[in-house]
Amino acid sequence: MRLHQLAGIGKHTDGSITRLPFTPQDRQAGLLILSFMKEAGLKTRQDAAGNLIGQWIPEGISGEQAAPVIVGSHYDTVLNGGAFDGCLGLLAAIEAVQSMREAGYVPSCPVYVIGFKDEEGNRFGYGMVGSRSICGRMQPEGLFSRDRDGISLGDAMTAFGLDPSRLNSCRIFPIRAMLELHIEQGKILESQGCTIGIVEGIAGLERHTIRIEGNSAHAGATPMEARQDPVPAMSRWILEITRLARERKHCVATVGSIQTSPGACNIICGSVEFSLDLRSLRDQDRKEIMENMAVFEKQLEWQEHVRIRRWLDQEIPSAPCADGLKSRMEEICKKEGYSFCRLMSGAGHDSMNFSGICPISMIFVPSVGGYSHRKEEFTSMEDCGAGTQVLLEMILAAETF
Ligand code: HGY
Ligand code: MN
Ligand code: MN
Image 1: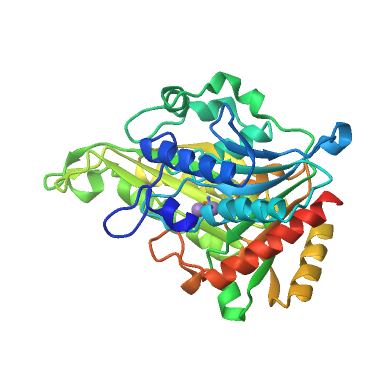
Image 2: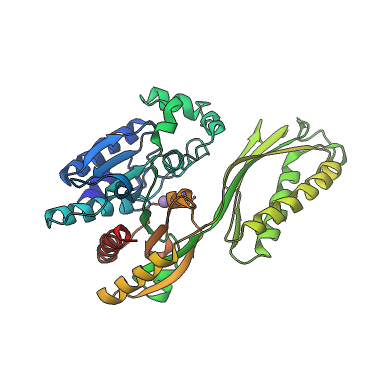
């Protein structure tokens, strides 16, 4: 089965999967996915960002009709991730189009199946490189983001055989609609016994890097009152952002990566560098929280005798899904007898980059136990099948949307 074949690329002995962008595992996965697209009868190409594009352009289609329905998802993983995040949506899209073609169906507009590149941002910290490029929203500074070995995103793309100077050529416009099937990555569908999630919208997100500099010194010979220790300052910073996020509904703040320097047990750190991933369904929440943090940082610098620098790595506004497509999805669920509920997506997705360019629509299927971004990530074949059926019928709906 295609999902298991793809999951085998980058799999560790513990069963988790690491398939980071512009790596040998990525190349191997790309070749396999292109072969699946060819089996489905699609005309395949890879664009300057490394997106995999399978095109179905019916005879005689031109002009306005040429605006494609785009359907797909990403195929990179997080570090030690699972088999379903992104890949289910991409393989389901290939499956749906293959079924339509084999049934002799001819769409009234082009249908592009796209495997998006580097959605997770787990290697360079920037993320959504493929979908931003297709939407003309790739920021040039993103190319200078670096991985843990100091390799920049731009250099990694060039070494992979791509051309980061031609990302503008990735732009697809106009687009009729963007459809994405994805695992929920939380527990709502499972707890409500729903097979299908009709996504209302995707939370906006911003990611920062924070660096706090103090003064490295001997852990034993330096009295507490004489220290300029960035670690207690960082701890207070993290407690403050956590407090501010907990005060607001649908707002989440995560510090997922922390580096201390020099990082030895008997040396007071000279500096610490850590990440912030802040999300909210209300963009105003994020603005208020970061304004509060700017004031808090000034106090912290003075009280802890340290210097704090923070820079924004990326920001993507929240993205509402198209009402008309949500209603069509509800009709499809009722017709097919699938239990469904409406929910917001706290997780970010490639679709959010299409907001404001074309109508977007996301279909969720349940994650067993709510597990995701770990090897236990799982969705039943029955739910995968239901999600694929809804995706197929949403392609039909989007054509006439
Ligand atoms: O980070 C996210 O929300 C997504 O998994 N990329
Ligand atoms: Mn993910
Ligand atoms: Mn994903």
